[in-house]
Image (cartoon, helix red, strand yellow):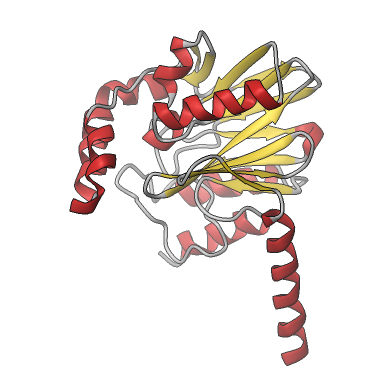
Length: 267
């Protein structure tokens, strides 16, 4: 048993080192990790860790799945995309109404970037946007005054390309197919997942927890009763996924989905 544990630990270290060699530091809070020539994980600490995804759909098109927490971080990543990937067009997808899904929307719309999101996300921005903003501010410490000022001045901007949440949407962009799907309520009433068939990649957003997560995190907008049912829909529908990206923490494979189910069942 000891040998198995040692071998497993070595494997984890090897995988961590593999990802670390691709990490690009854009500033003290914003990092990029290259998964392959098509996909990049964008991790923003503001002050909490949150993952977004950059997908090079073709030589001319890039898709941003969720945004950094704020407009400054989003401006920096759009500059990086334009400089390094040189697309003719950038599109974006919001997977929910929380600030780690769409805090950068004002900048995207200022630049004429289309944002796809559900009708339910738009409704929740109206219903709970201010409440969410105040909750974030209440979590900040006195020494985080700079971040607090950003959240106090934040404006929640809705996606401009909306679809009915129950219908979802399938976007063919460049060489890739983006299936934007609502499996049911979970971490929030509007939490969407995005599956890219050609990459066997699932962006699970906040409904999927990393393997290091020992609890469900913030559940103020969660439907705890429906969340496990929604996770099992994802588990069955996307069992072919090879890469699973959670919103917070390290990515991995479909074991993250089972781990989330386990957390919910033990909640």
